[in-house]
Length: 203
Image 1 (tube, rainbow, N blue to C red):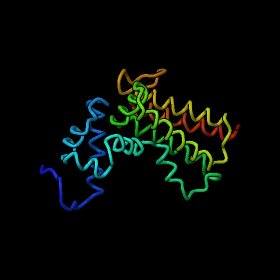
Image 2 (tube, rainbow, N blue to C red):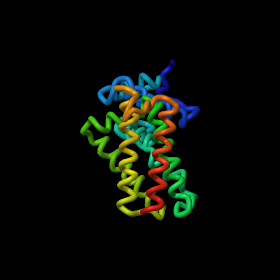
Image 3 (cartoon, helix red, strand yellow):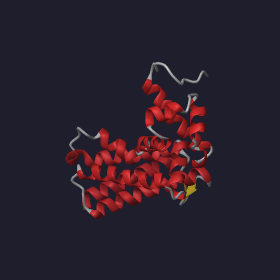
Image 4 (cartoon, rainbow, N blue to C red):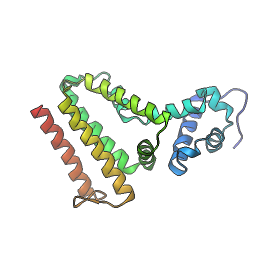
């Protein structure tokens, strides 16, 4: 593919998305160590100057990629015009169930979670801080603001991470449930719903 260095760019949005996608591809196959400016540009099929032109730096490109994968940030944006005091619990169900199914199927997201858990880097700390801000914005719109309720969400989200990563790496059975089967998946989804219904009723 011809590299674009100068001249008009027909589709800036498409070009930026290809650079962001390149970050995901490298993260999935090579890990964080592969996220070098020349490698990102090569995978995207563009000159590395475009990274600086559109994002300012490689770090800012990676930051934007991480923000795009922050599920809570996306959920908060999608609920901007929703009455969370009325529909908060139902939206939390949808958010956690979607997170479970997306993470279960998406190898790129699985690699991203493993990266968060195993690397001590400034970018990862920024991601955790941004994710926490997104969660907080989501909770503040809801009538459920108690620490007890938040603790339940924390346990559910941690469980979703663990089940998804275990199923993708070390085996599908957990507590006797085949988490890779449709029946097992439905049991996990039902458990998430039941726990949230319990929390809504009791807290």
